[in-house]
Structures are given as C-alpha cells and as structure tokens.
Image (cartoon, rainbow, N blue to C red; front, top):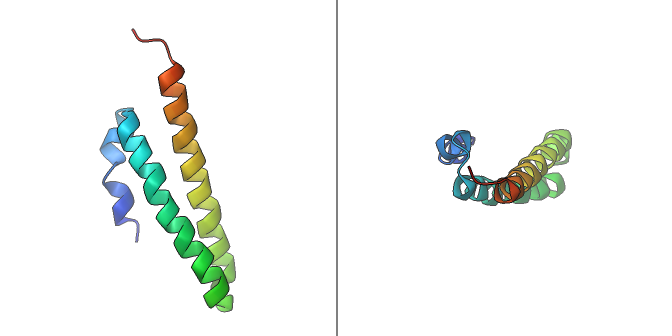
Length: 75
C-alpha cells in the first residue's frame, strides 16, 4: 500500500517542487481510503484515523515545503 508514495520519493529528496506536488496529491488518496475505512470497518477505526492523520501530515508538509521552495531566493 505504500508503493505509490515511492514514485515521487527521489524527486522529493532532490527538492523538486513537482514531485512534492505529486506526493501531496497521492496523499489525498490515502486520506480518502482512511475516511472510507472509518465508516466501513469499526473494528479497525483507530488504524483508519491514524491513516487520515498521516496523510494530512504528508499533504500539508509537502504543500508548505513547495511554498517555502518558491519563496526561497534563487542562488
């Protein structure tokens, strides 16, 4: 389930804004999956809430990192 996040990994490690944008976009798929699991499977609700939390952390982290890269002075 973590494989889609490996695609933009090299670009994120090289500080490429486009890869960070794709990682933020992919995190929304995990958010959607977590929301569905919260309602469908009450037995694993805690894990689904953790998935939602981590996907939102990735989304906002990647978004703010892209914002900081755009604001940084060019060498």
